[in-house]
Length: 420
Image (cartoon, rainbow, N blue to C red; front, side, top):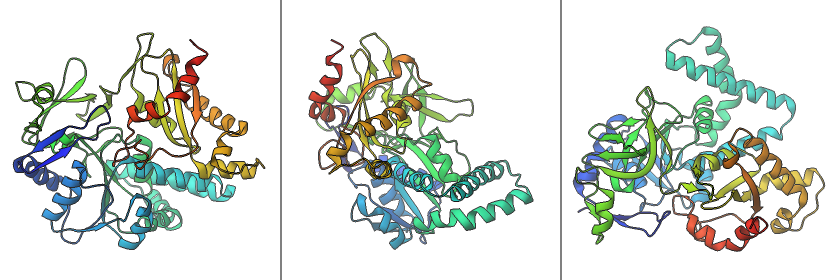
């Protein structure tokens, strides 16, 4: 045994995952084979080392390749630390990319029309260039346009991340396709992988030269992956844990007699062999009407709104879906000031009918293509963000649904009160 790493407890009580030296070394050597890292690289680390992804990729693998690791003071200082440290590689959870994307989007939308037009032109050029590069056919005209776009738009964005990023590695949760495509367009590549604490953690990963946004790549060498009859992803290999500490029952439930780890995730292989995660099996809602609903893709869709910072879907064993929404306070304050809506603080701000209406309009627009049973019928605006300190989030910024639902039980019940 090398270590015991406890699971985040997003779907129940945390369990101690027993990992051996062999488990971790198999993942380290494999990761280093497709993630180019050498002694000239500098990592910026902000995820806790109690998280298996950061421990393996951002610590063990970095050290094994001779790289330097700089540690951020906190999640809040990452923006300043990027400019200070000038990292070449960074491991992160999708929340960081979502925040950067939304900040840029807000700045662009509030800019003069001429600047918006230039920015949108540059993103289109960057996207076309990335596609042409993958196909190996970049025209002279597109190459020239890309150099111009890089000089007037992309260079500024790259400078904000320190100016030396070779690539980001994303894990811990699903990365929305739109974020991967946006960062690729500006010249900041994100490589997404997938795994669990129980698998040391990597099971599959995209490569720099073989990737597809919206997927978590292909199984890494030495690890077998198959899809069970109910859609659950199963994995087997040298990276799979020996079991849970002092929990034989949970171990037997997680690893079957043939050595397959039951991940609890639902997924498919696409036609090109890329693994696509659709949702967590344990996070699946079953409505009172018997419909199966996977919340994470729906929640991710609403986070595309510049006015929404956090979104928690409610609806297990309920008649319809509702939500707890934390607004992007910078965006709604700017909206309130622009429209001369008076307020004294954030709590007062979220109580304003005009703010509710703008969020309601965003929700209606974003969910128009969803099935009726997947649509949010009611929501409540929260006056402060869900946080690690408040106990509503894990150290890797995942929502603790049971904690959130307990904490806001009265608000949730109020949304369903009139339907009973």
